[in-house]
Image 1: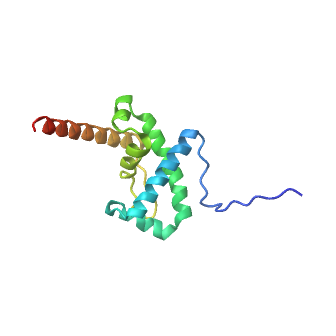
Image 2: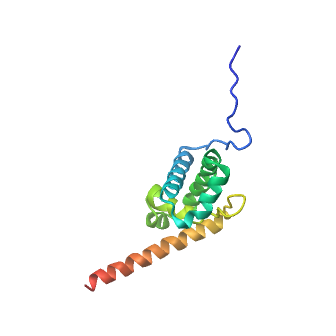
Image 3: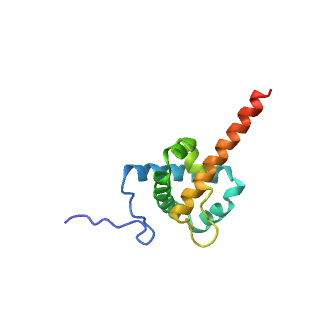
Length: 140
């Protein structure tokens, strides 16, 4: 008689990511979520409140969803913008995670076009700050 596998959380279990990039994105989001939890960063108060309410397994499931979405946003950016936000795991994901609305009963992801525009704006802000820093260093 074959064994029956029972899903751990049939109502909340996410659909597994479909590509290696989606898996990598989900792991990167989860890593940044864990870092935010460990450091208690004030800007993540809403995420930490949600985490305390729904628990770690549900937040891990949300990391899959957010990761897949972040990968779609990354792929929607032009090469120059991706270069300004690279590497994906250490620069893009933390910046992207700050655009996710954790306030309320559910995680709210923006429309893909809105997220792409927000990340383009973030890249331009970083480029402007980098130019300012270089000009200040050159003036010393």
